[in-house]
Length: 191
Image 1 (cartoon, helix red, strand yellow):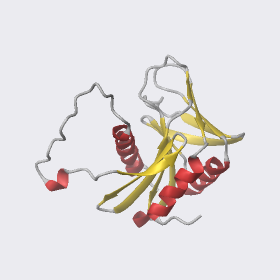
Image 2 (image 1 turned 90 degrees about the vertical axis):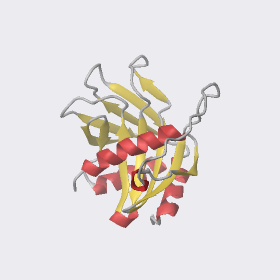
Image 3 (image 1 turned 45 degrees about the horizontal axis):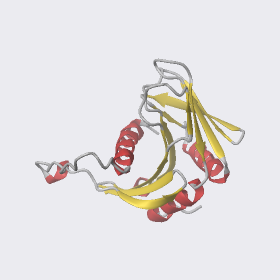
Image 4 (image 1 turned 60 degrees about the vertical axis):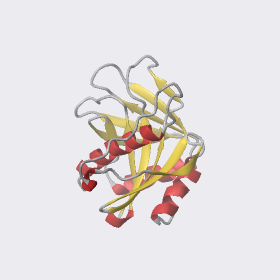
């Protein structure tokens, strides 16, 4: 299974997630630019809800529904490492028979050819990296990671950026399971 579309989806999801965050009250409200062609318009992202530091979203594109959850870490180390906010995501694309795609967007380019690791309450998973994102190697591993995260308390993600030393992001999994249930329901995924 090719992961090219996963990279594109990851970038879109991170942008959509960041746009869903509340803006600062002091910033002037900007009017959205109108696309020249209707086909150029991006799909509207609908927030389904969430719990803890996790939020669930749905949008529709030509190929069908995309349901995803996204959350940020409680703690990131090294503290002074400059990068965009790291994000963990799980994505379903039911019309493409794709579910439980796990990705970790690190917020900075990762070292070429490096692997990343994920530890969920003592269970270790190896991930591969491309660009600024880490992925599991198989859909079976995706499903196993999602099941572990739904039952777990904490997830610790470690990766090596192109510049700087190893980064460690610690995610609280409180709220992960009910947020996962929201995207499962929206995309008709049975557990």
